[in-house]
Amino acid sequence: MRSAPIRVQLEQKLRDRYRTSFRFSQRPQPETALTGIEAVDQLSRGLPRGHITEIFGRDSSGRTTLLLSALAQITEKEEVCGLIDPAGTFDPTSAATIGVDLERLLWIRTGRDIDQTLKATDLLLQGGGFGLIGVDLGEFPLATVRRIPFSSWFRLQRAVEDTPTILLFLNRDSSLKTCASLVLRLQLDCTDWSPHLFRGIRPRVEIIRSKTDPTASWNNASQRFWIPPANYFQAVANRPVHTPFIKEASSIEGVSCHES
Image: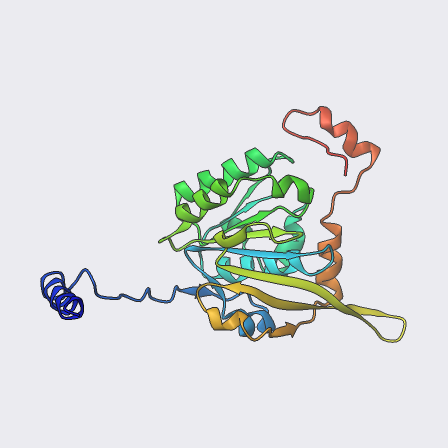
């Protein structure tokens, strides 16, 4: 029966001696950056800096448009961004039309080599100075992305931590597990026709996980937004076009052509 009073006395002595060690400290909310798409920003409250964000969805679900919009918002603030483009699908003309400041964008084409893609991502994080680093994994087979060991994702998570950089991955399916602080799923909800004229697409965005704001993913809320035809066609046009001319260009040093 004397064990309870002894425990109380011990806890009191430890509390007085190590007062600061046992004090609970809540981590402050990270700074966020808006994507420029109102529905996405209302739902997610922006992309958290110093964290990994994963945006996944099928082709034509709005992944590319969301990335370009975020790049436009951040380069407009005179911050430098990095884009790692393994498949070479990025179109500078379309990006400039949407508002991306190309003078503040570092574009890296690694080829469809997942190891080189991860290495380039790590080098940019170690170099620092980027407001956003976007990595497009959407052209890799899902099996290739899922074979990436968890330790690789964890290393990138630690590298971006406590920095002002947003590390953003585009993917066909969620693959980063718990290393992603914010996970958004995009789904094509419907297409707009009036009556025979294509007016755009309406994807739906849903928060799958948000470590920085856990309540955001508890209510299963989602938002639908609109992508006008110009942005949609630009995103589709960014996909590689395989022609004999491009295949012949593979013989030029530094230029590669990949079959889908």
